[in-house]
Length: 137
Image (cartoon, rainbow, N blue to C red; front, side):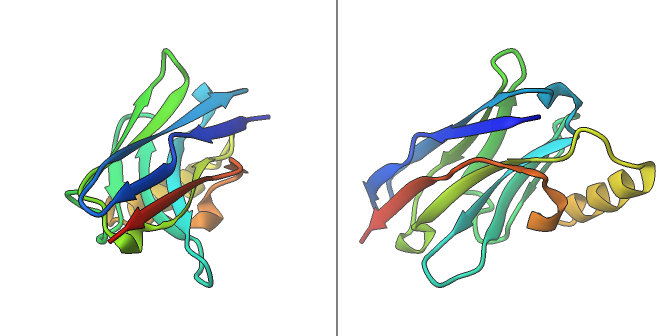
Protein backbone atom coordinates (compact mmCIF):
# COMPACT_ATOMS: atom_id res chain seq x y z
CA UNK A 1 0.00 0.00 0.00
CA UNK A 2 1.22 3.50 -0.84
CA UNK A 3 0.54 6.57 1.26
CA UNK A 4 1.00 10.07 -0.16
CA UNK A 5 1.09 13.32 1.84
CA UNK A 6 1.27 16.68 0.09
CA UNK A 7 2.65 19.92 1.55
CA UNK A 8 3.80 23.34 0.40
CA UNK A 9 0.53 24.86 -0.70
CA UNK A 10 -0.42 28.39 0.23
CA UNK A 11 -1.38 31.81 -1.03
CA UNK A 12 0.72 33.81 -3.45
CA UNK A 13 0.30 36.75 -5.77
CA UNK A 14 0.25 36.33 -9.53
CA UNK A 15 3.76 35.94 -10.87
CA UNK A 16 4.95 34.31 -7.68
CA UNK A 17 6.27 30.80 -7.02
CA UNK A 18 5.48 27.83 -4.82
CA UNK A 19 7.06 24.40 -4.45
CA UNK A 20 4.84 21.48 -3.58
CA UNK A 21 6.18 18.31 -1.98
CA UNK A 22 4.67 14.84 -1.78
CA UNK A 23 6.10 12.46 0.80
CA UNK A 24 5.51 8.86 -0.24
CA UNK A 25 5.63 5.73 1.87
CA UNK A 26 4.94 2.11 1.04
CA UNK A 27 6.12 0.28 -2.08
CA UNK A 28 6.83 3.42 -4.04
CA UNK A 29 9.94 2.12 -5.76
CA UNK A 30 7.85 -0.39 -7.63
CA UNK A 31 5.48 2.27 -8.90
CA UNK A 32 5.93 3.08 -12.57
CA UNK A 33 5.09 6.76 -12.44
CA UNK A 34 3.84 9.54 -10.19
CA UNK A 35 2.09 12.78 -10.95
CA UNK A 36 0.35 15.95 -9.88
CA UNK A 37 -3.27 16.82 -10.52
CA UNK A 38 -5.38 19.82 -9.61
CA UNK A 39 -9.04 20.53 -9.16
CA UNK A 40 -10.59 23.98 -9.08
CA UNK A 41 -14.11 24.57 -7.69
CA UNK A 42 -16.74 23.41 -10.14
CA UNK A 43 -14.18 21.87 -12.50
CA UNK A 44 -12.98 18.36 -13.21
CA UNK A 45 -9.68 17.08 -11.90
CA UNK A 46 -6.91 17.99 -14.35
CA UNK A 47 -3.58 16.28 -14.90
CA UNK A 48 -0.76 18.78 -14.42
CA UNK A 49 2.45 16.79 -14.70
CA UNK A 50 3.84 13.28 -14.38
CA UNK A 51 7.22 11.61 -14.07
CA UNK A 52 8.22 8.00 -14.65
CA UNK A 53 10.79 5.84 -12.85
CA UNK A 54 13.17 6.59 -15.73
CA UNK A 55 12.57 10.35 -15.30
CA UNK A 56 10.45 10.83 -18.41
CA UNK A 57 8.32 13.91 -17.72
CA UNK A 58 4.99 15.01 -19.09
CA UNK A 59 3.16 18.33 -18.69
CA UNK A 60 -0.21 19.79 -19.47
CA UNK A 61 0.02 22.53 -22.09
CA UNK A 62 -1.28 25.08 -19.58
CA UNK A 63 1.77 24.69 -17.33
CA UNK A 64 4.60 23.96 -19.77
CA UNK A 65 7.53 26.27 -19.21
CA UNK A 66 6.23 27.32 -15.79
CA UNK A 67 6.01 24.11 -13.73
CA UNK A 68 8.71 21.49 -13.19
CA UNK A 69 8.12 18.02 -11.76
CA UNK A 70 10.98 16.16 -10.09
CA UNK A 71 11.60 13.30 -7.69
CA UNK A 72 14.15 12.43 -5.05
CA UNK A 73 14.17 8.66 -4.75
CA UNK A 74 16.47 8.74 -1.71
CA UNK A 75 13.90 10.84 0.16
CA UNK A 76 10.85 9.14 -1.39
CA UNK A 77 9.57 12.59 -2.30
CA UNK A 78 7.92 14.05 -5.37
CA UNK A 79 8.08 17.79 -6.08
CA UNK A 80 6.28 20.33 -8.22
CA UNK A 81 8.04 23.66 -8.67
CA UNK A 82 5.52 26.24 -9.83
CA UNK A 83 6.78 29.55 -11.21
CA UNK A 84 5.02 32.54 -12.73
CA UNK A 85 1.73 31.50 -11.21
CA UNK A 86 -1.54 32.74 -12.66
CA UNK A 87 -4.86 33.22 -10.82
CA UNK A 88 -6.24 30.35 -12.93
CA UNK A 89 -3.71 28.03 -11.28
CA UNK A 90 -5.79 28.30 -8.10
CA UNK A 91 -6.93 24.80 -7.13
CA UNK A 92 -6.41 21.93 -4.76
CA UNK A 93 -3.31 20.07 -5.90
CA UNK A 94 -3.11 16.31 -5.50
CA UNK A 95 -0.17 13.92 -5.65
CA UNK A 96 -0.83 10.53 -7.25
CA UNK A 97 1.01 7.29 -7.95
CA UNK A 98 0.50 4.36 -10.28
CA UNK A 99 -0.24 0.85 -9.16
CA UNK A 100 2.69 -1.28 -8.03
CA UNK A 101 2.05 -3.86 -10.73
CA UNK A 102 0.89 -3.33 -14.28
CA UNK A 103 0.79 -5.50 -17.37
CA UNK A 104 3.27 -4.72 -20.18
CA UNK A 105 0.37 -3.55 -22.34
CA UNK A 106 -0.88 -1.20 -19.62
CA UNK A 107 2.59 0.24 -19.17
CA UNK A 108 3.00 0.72 -22.91
CA UNK A 109 -0.33 2.51 -23.26
CA UNK A 110 0.29 4.88 -20.37
CA UNK A 111 3.88 5.64 -21.41
CA UNK A 112 2.59 6.50 -24.87
CA UNK A 113 0.02 8.86 -23.43
CA UNK A 114 2.54 10.50 -21.13
CA UNK A 115 4.92 11.00 -24.06
CA UNK A 116 2.12 12.96 -25.77
CA UNK A 117 1.47 15.08 -22.69
CA UNK A 118 -1.67 13.25 -21.60
CA UNK A 119 -1.82 12.80 -17.81
CA UNK A 120 -5.05 10.95 -16.97
CA UNK A 121 -6.49 10.42 -13.51
CA UNK A 122 -7.73 6.97 -14.51
CA UNK A 123 -4.14 5.77 -14.88
CA UNK A 124 -3.29 6.49 -11.22
CA UNK A 125 -4.19 4.29 -8.28
CA UNK A 126 -3.03 6.10 -5.14
CA UNK A 127 -3.93 9.65 -4.17
CA UNK A 128 -2.97 12.13 -1.47
CA UNK A 129 -5.42 14.35 0.39
CA UNK A 130 -4.48 17.50 -1.51
CA UNK A 131 -3.01 20.90 -0.71
CA UNK A 132 -4.62 24.24 -1.52
CA UNK A 133 -2.89 26.69 -3.84
CA UNK A 134 -4.42 30.16 -4.14
CA UNK A 135 -3.08 32.75 -6.57
CA UNK A 136 -4.40 36.28 -6.28
CA UNK A 137 -4.29 38.89 -9.02
